Image (cartoon, rainbow, N blue to C red):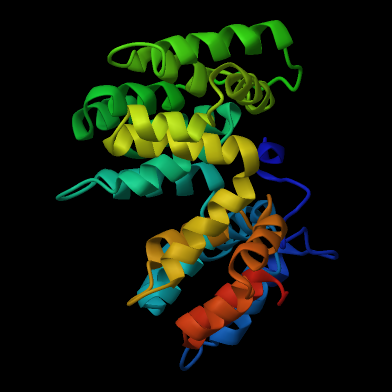
Length: 323
């Protein structure tokens, strides 16, 4: 099952000669000793794939009768603790928890909801929904419904359903038809038919949408992103623009999110941790390339100048190198 969470452009891979029992023992020693051996924890957890970390978690529980994440929480603190706990969490559970945090307390973190729901595949979304229900005994859809409203809610629910077509085949006739529907729903009428935007942008495959956006430009002489900016507003607009960005270049979309998390006063660790951990086995190498291309300096150097201590060391290990 883990394969849907692993791509070819990650910075972290399976560790050769892996032994769950040796790692569990070394981690136990690192935690139990006088003063924590953070270096040991970091080197083990950042040099094993998530699938391997899950085996360590199982082994740790079986041998010591304790949850590794609880021991890490008891021993570490702050952003470093959050990051280390994230590393030992199964990907679907991690995303479920991030979604919950985005909707908890006062105010909703719409940017985080948008980022997670636009960058996960349908198969991943199905697994995330299951994990969400298992952990919180509530459906993800119900929580999204109570925390959001209007067209934004409708679109998020469609994405959360994991019904986006995943096939790589494109249908030219459909692209022309959809492009015309989008044109008629927006630029070509008084008022906007938002449902049409939601249906097409939330259900068609990314390759299909790429072609549809090309057709759209031909019909309307405008880029779809400009039309969305002109026709729509608020979080719904943000969501659709995120989809357009992801269709064209998901790593560039995530590089922009990282850039925002790292620039200005204060670091947005919630976003930084999430992208670094969740993309470390999928496309972090591509995100690094896009980051450098768009901002003229490396992701590595941005992390280095914005974070410190064991937290910095861990992020840099996940980043995997300077560009």
